[in-house]
Image (cartoon, rainbow, N blue to C red; front, side, top):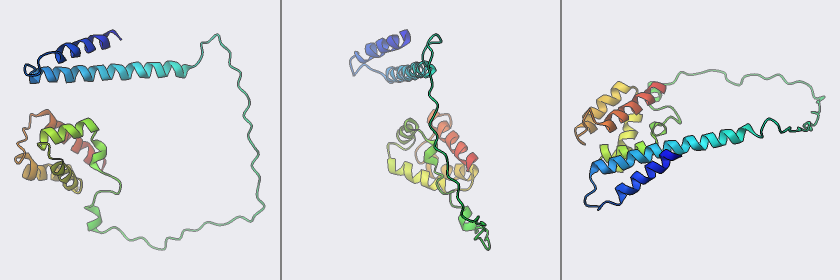
Length: 181
């Protein structure tokens, strides 16, 4: 709890500076302080929930009532034999295999913070370009094809640098997506 107070104080001190004098480094510091504080609050919350889950202290006795379970009636109906209705199975065509699996979307692998980071840092705040890129990449068969497509269509167009954290994070997300596809 003390660290949360300290982080709040640091955030307050940085935010009281003249807005023209605040540098990018100061903003990054505030973001880092906010992330640490968020993690601390989540940990604090989980400890509270865990202690509430444990229930009353050991010296307190709890009397549990027996559950009232109704009996299940049996049927005198004749048994029914289940048979398969499938007569034949056709293997999927190549066209189906190039489509992403139903319900599988790369967006499920991208958190809300990462989404906004990718849009702002990788696509110059162009949400449409971000969405079109995800649609194109999701339809590809492999990570290698996705990297090749990105090299041709996005990497140079938006000026991505390989050592940029957002670029590395984006490629990690792609790798995770194709590993489960």
